[in-house]
Image 1 (spheres, helix red, strand yellow):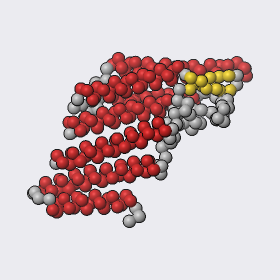
Image 2: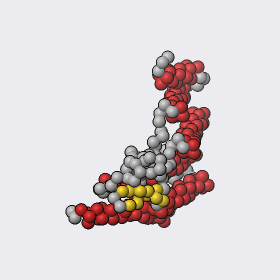
Image 3: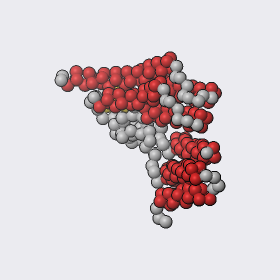
Image 4: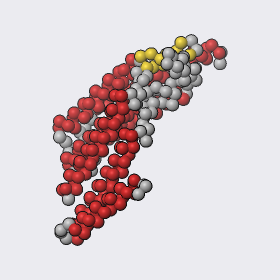
Length: 147
Length: 121
């Protein structure tokens, strides 16, 4: 099968079908298990495909923190750190409580502050008339829009 | 259904750990460049050069401190919901961003005024 995504879908459906047909228990319980396992495996495989493609370089993330003119962006770096922290916190809380937690306004504010900084920083630069950037030893002469 | 929850837990752990690990590895090995992260613009005549920016340094320090503080709150207090972010932390972080943005705006505006006074516009 040439399309790996389709192959993963088939694998998930086969596992769900096996659970639905062969696992002992009443029909509703088997249906719940089949859907639960099928979705869990499918979503994991989609994420895993992306993970593998990033690891092998098919999906480039080299410019994750870079701006168009070169140089790393402080705003992007900050947003990356907060995204990691909130994502990890979210995972730990869901794993502990087994339910979708309420996301309080102050957590959104924490993420919003860094996103706002990025936006304002862009606005400041867009509103200024910048001269050409001085060429450096490594030959970077382009204008750096790093924040 | 507990076994599905266990499966989902391990899947989430592998995916999150994988994403964090790859990004961390690329940051360490230079795959994701951090060159110029702490450099701010400086005006030299009619061109921009870059040098270490105190605004960026303080922003980086406050960001990492705040992020670590919040993560430790989640890990140590074992909560079943998001812990509250102290108002002081939000204020400090907001102030740090304001200092960074203020410095940036001041630098750009000062160049603009110089430029305008030269050209007489």
